[in-house]
Amino acid sequence: MQEITMLDAIERYIRGEMLPEERVYFEQMRKSNPAVDQMVVEHTIFLHQMSQYGEIKDFKSQLNEIHNTLSTAGEIRETPAAKVVVLWKKYKRVVGVAASIAGITALGISGLVSYLSPKGPNEKLIELSRELHNTQLKLNSVSNKINEGSVNQATAAFKSGGTGFLIDGNGYLVTNYHVVKNATLVEVQNRQGASFKARVLHLDPTADLAFLKIEDTTFKAYGPLPYGISRTGTKLGDDLFTMGYPRDEIVYGKGYMSARTGFQGDTLSYQITVAANPGNSGGPVLNKDGEVVGIVSSSQHDVQGAVFAIRTKNIFRALDDMRSDSTVLKSDSLFNHVRVPLSSPIKGMERQQQIEKIEDCIFIVKSNL
Amino acid sequence: MRTETNEQKLLEGLALNDRKAIETIYKQHYNMVQSLILNNNGYADDARDIFQEAMIVLYEKVKTGSFELNCQLKTYLYSVCRRLWLKRLNQSQRISPEVENLEETVPVEEEMEWHQQRNLDFQVMEKSMKNLGEPCKSLLEAYYLQKKSMVEIAENFGYTNADNAKNQKYKCLIRLKKLFSQYKK
Figure 1 (cartoon, one colour):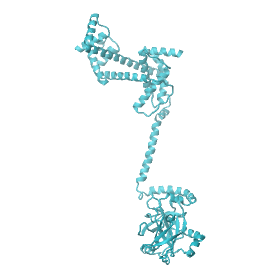
Figure 2: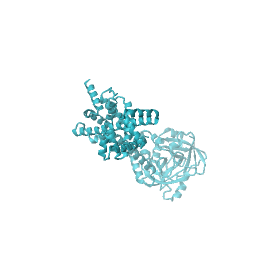
Figure 3: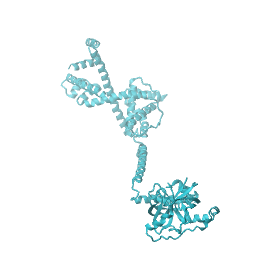
Figure 4: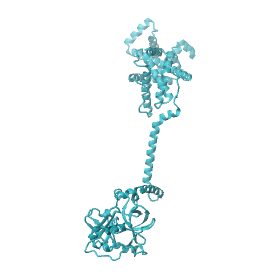
């Protein structure tokens, strides 16, 4: 109650409604009592704030009224631009951001899918990607030839190492060019662990082939080789097997021909699916008849089990080259007597027996570089 | 020269809350502000809000009596609206890092700060009034804003006499003051 009386006094004082006598008394009270003074100041400010509030409120409602009047009268136009244009302008950034997020997500998901999906069972996916590869390949094969196979080596992850096999019982071996390239000393080692010095007779970087001759007094010439070298090659789906030295022990691998071309469409080689390891390079690929149909050369590191084998017809082509090469003939007088076996004596044998016959003709190739 | 005196007259009218003056300013400049807002991620409703807020800034300014317009009214309003809109975009986090400058602008930072303080007071008062409840709100509005006499108010609200109404009014005022200081914190 006292507060109300006080407020009433303050308001009357502010509005100047006090009688002169009362006003003098009140002013004295303000001077002597700071609390009263404070109340007066505070209330003045508050009343001022209230009236400002009232003014703005009135002004606002007036503005709204004017707005409505003007807009009904057509003096101001609301939403002048076409709606779609406005929407587009408004959301173009959002749309841009959304589109790029969608793009990134799509890329991420497809990346994840291809990364995580099991390579084996998901045949469909792999076949699809292979098709893509193949179309690209055919285009590339031309440039491959021009580049003399350097493309092949530069991009494929070679499981280099060294295996070689006899093509003539007198100590003529075939291995990969990349196994012995730059080598100044070459040695071959048979299954029993006996080493023989060998000489590089001919290099064919294009086909990734190298021809060695064992020139060691301890080497005894073989009789007829157990296998033949096929001139025709192999067909898609043929059962194949490989022999090689990924370790010091000879290792047998079983697989099949899985594509007619090699890495990036290389037509000099073809793809087989077999487990191959570094060291298999230069080893023979044989068919069920025990005919050599290819030479293991490389594998593609991102495709499991895909191994590339060089077609055997490259051996014959290289041999023809060598026969017309005077330096080869000069360095090796016996070269003219080299006879590559074409038929395979082990045809029709059980696989174990075939292997027993073959393994003696397969050597570890060691080069000093 | 003529436009300047015309604009001066409009501002004088605005200070006196003259409807004709307000309407003229509104008519002359609203469309410009609307295209600014629409071109920068806003809707027509935003344009209305922003323009009216700018009008309030101008109104508060001219009411102080010490306001001097150093540029065209159009430029001034445009600058204020642009600042207000930038702030609004910032608060609502709508994507629009830069607002296109369609017109020339003048610095209005001082006004903005000043207006912001007053706007805050206004909002606190509005909230306090709203939460005060009836009949206190109407009673206070009738007396302090519409400046009606206590006798009139007593009649309108059905109090037996003006003194009772006055007592009630003070009670309401004390509550309002409490709410106001509470919300202000």
